[in-house]
Image 1 (cartoon, rainbow, N blue to C red):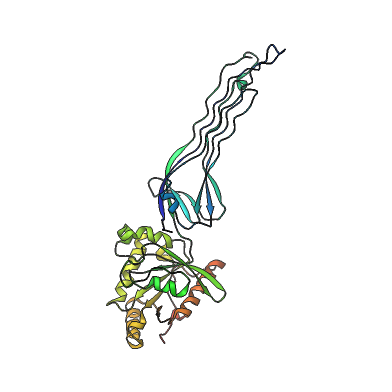
Image 2: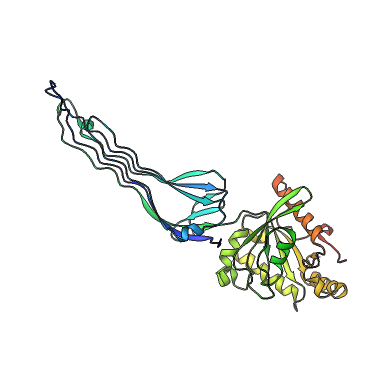
Length: 351
C-alpha cells in the first residue's frame, strides 16, 4: 500500500427537507384542519478515528463527501426521515486543517473518537406548525435549512515514540530493519526512503514505535526535499535519535546541519530529548572510528553512541537506552528541557 500523508477533500452536510402543506380529509370530518408534517434533518459530516488505517491513500481516489438530505414532510403530521450521516474514517494522528494549511481545526488522536464536523440543516416546518386561533387553515410551509460545505486539508502525523532524523544515506532505514520487523527499502544511495516508515522495537519488557522519515537536507524547514512535511511525522515523538554517517568527512558539520533545520522548523523539535549515534562504524574499524568519535565530541560537546546496524554492534545497548527514555515519557517524568546526551549514561564505547 502506498503511503499518503496529505490530502484535500470537499465536505457537504445534508440539506433539511421541506415541510408539507396538507389538510386532513376523512369521511364525516368536515373541518379536518392542517396536518402537514415537518421535513427531516439533513445528515451530519462526522470524522471517526480508527486504528486500522495508517495512511490517507483512500482520499486520493475520493475527494468529495456528502451527507444525505432530509426527506420531505408528509400529510397526517408525518415528519420526514433524517438524512444519513457521512462518516469519514481517518487514521490516528490525523489533523484537519483549514484551506490555508496552517489553521488546525481538529487534532484526532484517540481511536474510536467521533466528532461532528459539519451539522446537517434542520427540516422545514409543515403547515401544522403555523396553525393558530386566528389562522386555523394555514397554507404556509418552509423549505429545509441548507447544509454546510467547506474544503479542508487532512494531514497525517504519525504516532511514534522515537523519531529517526539525519541526512540522506545516514543509515536510518538499516537501523530500523535491524531493530524491528520493518523492511524498508535499503540501498547505497541518498533518498532511498521516499516516505515515512514505522517499526516496533522490543527492548526487554518495553515495546516502542520508531518512525523513520526520509533524509533531511539543508533548507528542509522551508520545504526543500519535502522536509517540512516529513518533520511533521516526528513532532509527536518522545525523543529523537539522530544518526550520523561516521564515514563522511565532517560528521560534526552534518550534526549542525540537522540541528539548524530542527530549530528553524519549530514545533518543539529542537527541545526534544536527543540521542546521537555515529553509524557505519564497521566500515572504518575500531581505531579510526574511535578517532572520529573523539573529534566529533570535541567539536560538538555531545556524547555519541557508535553503532553498526549491519554488524549488529552497539544496537542492543542503544535500544535499551531508547526504551528507558520511552518509559520515563510514558510515566510522565521529565527528561529535562533539552537532554542532548548530557552525562555518561549515553556514552557507549566501541567494542
